[in-house]
Length: 189
Image (cartoon, rainbow, N blue to C red):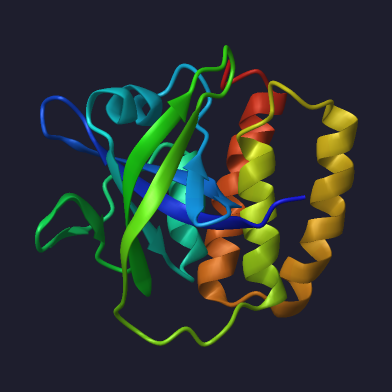
């Protein structure tokens, strides 16, 4: 199984408007792969403008917010690079697409890491942060997984949230649970 790094990816559309998406970047030797589902703004942006910025953050509210539809997180320009980074990023990586593989469901964009820059120290994750990331991934797959599987996974992840979450992690968890429960009630369909 490959190493996957969860981050917030910024791409830029034809209009110059930045787009944020929580994604897991797949390590493939010296390259990192961005594999967005079809259809998506990330996919369209990379097809027309083959640059991205991966922002690494320990604020899981950003992951939860993006999954729940909030995309207006503060950004900062990156000197000499076309895609901005999250203002809250602990570090960021500048990625240039060097090749693409077509796929009906999830095309793969193989990216060369042009530069990695650190902005603030990383003090480690707590278990609640990891649980929120996993719940965010589940929330993006509601249409692909059985309700039983989702409920089983959420029950397990909730243990870590109950034991180790601070206010930010609880806020992120609550956003995700509202999305998952709205889907269960048929409100997100």
